[in-house]
Amino acid sequence: MKFNSEMLKAYFVCGSQDLDGQDFEKLLEKSIESGITAFQFRDKGSSTLTSQERLELGERLRDICRSEKVPFIVDDDVELANKLSADGIHVGQKDEQIKKVIAETSPDMMIGLSAQTLDQIKIANKIKRIDYIGAGPIFPTTSKPDAVDPMGLSLLNDMSHASKVPIVAIGGILKSNLRSLRDNGAVGAAFITLITQSDDIEASVKDVLNVFD
Image (cartoon, rainbow, N blue to C red; front, side, top):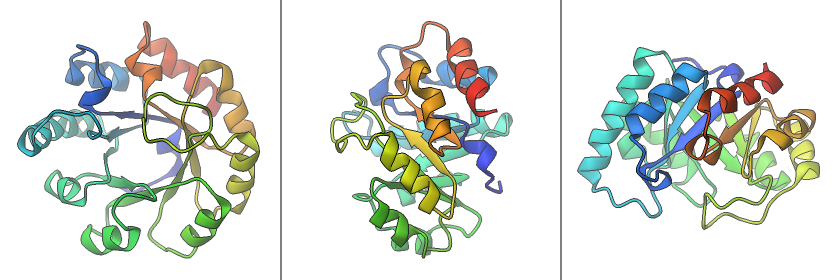
């Protein structure tokens, strides 16, 4: 699957640790039905899954995405991404080194990189295989216990102007701040609780698409 920036509009990120009794597969199916444009399998942190359980869950989630032609992206884990023949991999500044990721994945696999500073953007601009930047957290978030301090909109704007690739914003995404992300250069929003804690997934995704479409 070839990368294009449209995939970043409504980017759902989730792992088993983010769910509170929900059926992961049904949640993903409903999210896709509601219009998400990409899905990232981010199973880490407080996840209690074994490596084999994570692989088996990933296979089921990948198949759901594939059947609906929604990009299936794996967070951080090159080995898992390769085993699942994922459409893409996303890595953070503290995760596996980006050069290692590039060397060990298929040239067809799209690559996303997290960034929180202008210096990180300048370095990313020199790396040919990076397809997009995940900038954040923009706002305070409870979804990642190890999250760095919020960047804010001014820095998002500066990074968007400096980056050679499109930027998707993440961290503390709410209906009320979606437009401010677009106005400061983001081409889409990546979110966890916007769906996992939503009483109306279809409406939540529509809120995102109404801003970024």
